[in-house]
Length: 127
Picture 1 (cartoon, rainbow, N blue to C red):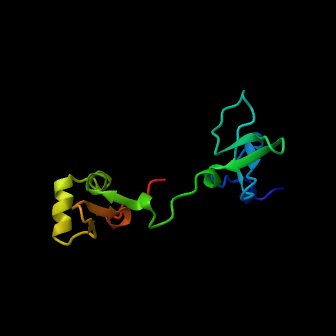
Picture 2: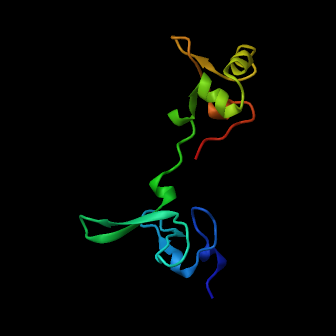
Picture 3: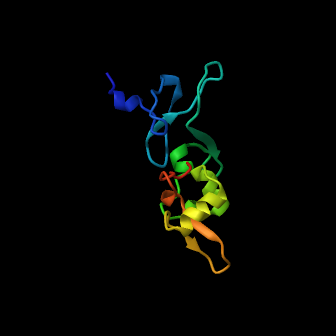
């Protein structure tokens, strides 16, 4: 009998049916890949033909689109983006920043920049 861990998708943590099993060539983890057109299923990765080796190549969505590193440019937002992410108006966020209520940086050109994790409520990175 296989363990429950072997039947869990690395990407979504859902149970993987036998017809949905694929293993990532990059990380080696199990993920959902629907190999049957007659049965429903969501793919948590891809498969394609590697033209150099003429072989199927499998990869999970985690390896295909890794999350941005903390502190990367994806975490830096201007005033309008930051206000939308925090659910505030730009004027309210600017006032909060000027009052010292949120970490920010003003560029030489006067543009306010924020890190996503510094916003009110600790807005997480998009993923």
